[in-house]
Length: 298
Image (cartoon, rainbow, N blue to C red; front, side, top):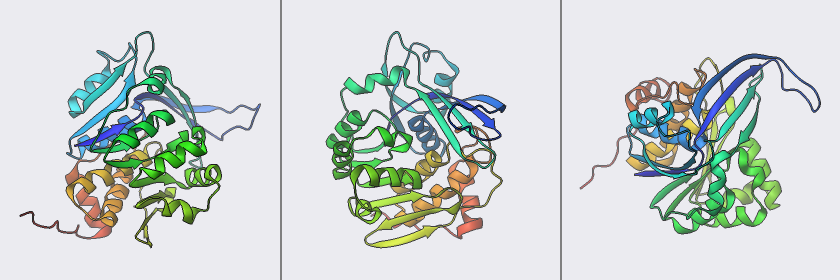
């Protein structure tokens, strides 16, 4: 069982010619509404890949009976939700320009309840974007912790990052989040890597890098036609974690994550083109060769 902690949200994804500077505007060329939220995206990806997953999240009055609830039921996502009366489920407004750069505005809504919620005790948890203090409490109580600060990295204090990293087994981040963590902590990238047992840093179209046991492994991106980068990081994590609990080596897990992400970015929306394990394997074989054999369990 994989547990995922963080936001469930409704995504409003817009395409723009360019991201405007302060006090300027731009034209929206396309806008669509999708199921989203970093933690929910990861949980959905894990479920479609065939692993058992429980999502720990906050939702408002509008979630019960909604299309989103029916979608999670269909995927078989187990849920431990904080229902916050008088609020609505969080909403994200994302704007992506023609170069693939992105800007996000996030309305927390029900997720404000994370600040005072009781943290669960979990055997294996991935912490996505959520309240920093709540994530600190989850990390302290859980046995095995995977942490992804996401775009909320700017809300973490030095003390909060130090607390979480002290309890983190796997750290996920993109190049922008790595830079911000280093700035907040006042450390180098190398020092940050040494704070955890394993670090995976993604670099958009330039692939990702695995840091473990003093070694550095570059995993190239799978070339596809990009429709929307939203959700690429979430799908990478769902692929990695699904492979990890099956017993694959970290390098293979990174390759699985890369392949999983390649499916998602081909379509607009974070949960509109999630691959099954069989679909993932087909593309994995085409780009990375035969997947490693798992050791026989006695």
